Image 1 (tube, helix red, strand yellow):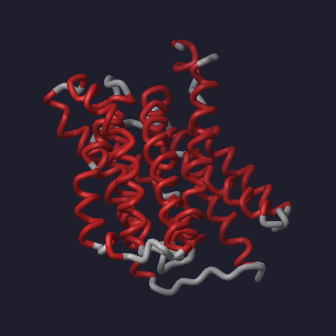
Image 2 (cartoon, one colour):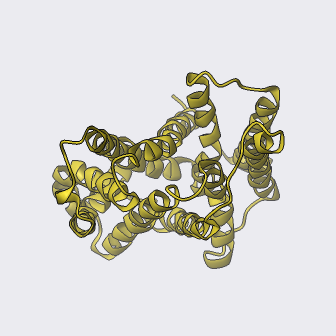
Length: 301
């Protein structure tokens, strides 16, 4: 299989995993609070990787260990809490729009702090994809089919902070951790996150909740599933994608989330309109432009 095919395959899998995360976080809120959902999710992801981390710890250069741990803090730990708390107070559609600012944050942080240079077509691709995403989410509200609530707007700052942290993490991984084995980085970094999340679970009174309640049981199972699939497996795949295709393309996964949202809606017998299809085509065009190599790159490939 070609490198490009593998990159696109990982891209699609990540879209499915993270696209489903929004719905699953909402579903798990019936029995757990936002902080509890985030803590269970990241603790489960770290716990799965603890056995592997014992073998991979020595594979990480000592001078880069701090960056590896920081990657989990910026890319998993803090954003998981920010999203879980915010989505209990704001509309999921609004959260989707804000989450899609991640590629823009990657570009801004890359240019401002890492002195990166992006081709104009890549920037146009990012902006085109963002435009398509905004149209996709806002069109049902403008036509009266759906209402997006703008209550508790202060909670949008939490998601904005999460996207900023994602932007830092993507650039950090792309510049400083790209030479390391993605599986080693993921296992070691997430294994360390069991410590702060265990403290968070204790602080949030997780041990004192009613485990006999069916809603609580379901919420815990969903959160654990989120941790294993949406954090542990997805983090490994994300690091592989950054290594193979670059941080900007990896961050465009946030543009693929609406596809998964539509599939969930279709499964719930919601109809897909031609306007939504056009918007999705605009998003795909943006992803294509951002990932298309220019003539110099294709000649040297």
